[in-house]
Each structure stands twice: as C-alpha cells, then as structure tokens.
Length: 351
Image (spheres, rainbow, N blue to C red):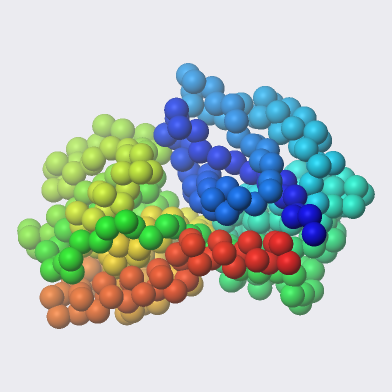
C-alpha cells in the first residue's frame, strides 16, 4: 500500500531573527522535526517566511501570497492536509482553505495553537463565527492545545471523537543536573510587561528576605520598563535570550515565577521548567491550572495577588522542595514529553 502523503501548513522559526522564535513556531518546529525524523512522506508550506529586517515584523502581504501560491501547488499532491493555525488563522483562513481542500477530496486536519479560542471568538462577527463553526464541523480531525478549549469546542460542534488533545510539548533535556537544594534563586522568563505580572512580581520581591534573588529575561513590551532602574529593586534584567539558551539558563535557578494575568494556553516556559524538574509559581489563568496542580509541581495564586505570591514563595523550603522537583519532572514526562506525544499524534494522523 502506498504511504499517505501529508501536506503540512504552518509557521516555522526564522534562524536570522530571534523575535520569530515564538510559542507557535517552536511547537511547529518540534512536530516538523519529528515528521522528518520518521521519514513521513510530506511537503511543508510555511506561513511566516518573510520578515522585515528593519522592524523585525512579519510581512503580511508577502507571506500570504507565498503561502497561497505554494499551498495551491502542493494540494493536488497530498492525501491529507494539516493546517497549523493560531486564533487568527483559524478564523480568517481556515474556513475557505479547508473547504477548497475538501472539494478536492482531501482529508482535512486542524491543529489550533493556544488556549484562548473562546475569548477570540467573542470578538468575531456572527456571520464569520458561523463560517468557522461550519468548517470545524466538516473537519476530519481537530487537535487543540488545552482541555478547556476542547470542552468549549464541543459545545460548538457537538461531542465528537474527532477532537484530540495536542498539548505544548518539548524534547527531554539531554542532561539534567543532580538534585538541587533550595537557595532562593528565582527567575522570570517571558515578555516584560505588567500583563505577564512583572509589576506584581517586583512588589512581591520587595517583601522577601535579602537571601532571595530574582533575574528577569525577555523582550521589553512596555515603555515604562525600557529605562527601568532594576538595580534599585534588587533584581537584575538579563535581556533577551535565544530559544536554544533557555534550558541552560533555567538550570541555574530554583524556581520559575510567571504571575501572568494574560490569557494563556500552555506557556512553553512552564513546560521547559518542568522538563528540568524546576517547580513553578504561576496563576489561575487560562490553561495553566491544567499544567500545574497547586501544591504538587508548583503553586498557583490569583492574578495580581501580591500577598498570595509572597506567601507562595515563602512556602517553598528545604523540606518540600525535593518533592516539588520530583513531581515537576514526572508531570513533564507523563504529559509534555514530545517523543511520546508526537508518536501518538502521528498514529492518529496516519490511521
């Protein structure tokens, strides 16, 4: 029997521009590398090929033209087309493109990045929302990142077994340090903005004893932090780092802090911390409670709850820290290790 031919549509990171190594591009690359490693017969159409070298922003018109031309050329070749889209692509492109693929007799698959689809749909006009729902009903296979998103999707298209969980995953680190002792070395890695909890975190840190340390990594997204006096707050801003540096840097710390108030799917930085056995303190936002069970592999507070954040940090000590670390590593291996997840997803795709 001839092997199935898979057409994959999605974004890939650009090696020249670190700004293009975002959550969706990293997830796409992870699965794409696995497809190539397993020698699946495939073609790939990139949706984010062109970047403005001055502004480091994507070129929307150029990318759309490139994507549509290469998609139309490759579609007749394949048996199955797998669209990998965020909220915007799912709403604005997927209904038309999936309908076109169906008319050519192709099996249509959607992988939707992120966990905020229900929020995004509230901002979409009713006619366009209905087109999306109709397209999803006609789709042969659907993969969503969070379990909450799957539950919401089934309220739109019915309780169907064609919807599957495809969580944010990462490769297992090649090396792990020996079990750590808790020394109060804390790190924040995300966009530097108040919706990610930077202001709350700075206030909470000011109430901690002097033996705690806190470093910040990430792109500055709010003007007030561009010339911010980090030193006066007893913290250090370390700048942006590339994706291949993240695990190495994370391994120098005892706790990851992400007190976000922004809508979230499964933040990649939390998955990476768990892969190293590093506990996480975060918030009850979006898909985060599906990753972190408070008191197990980390602790969760309410958004903007400075008192709760201070209490959570101070509750980590030498006695409970080893169990937090062990639980973090077990959670990663059971739910978010890419080899196991990609193998399962590929078996569904090719069945």
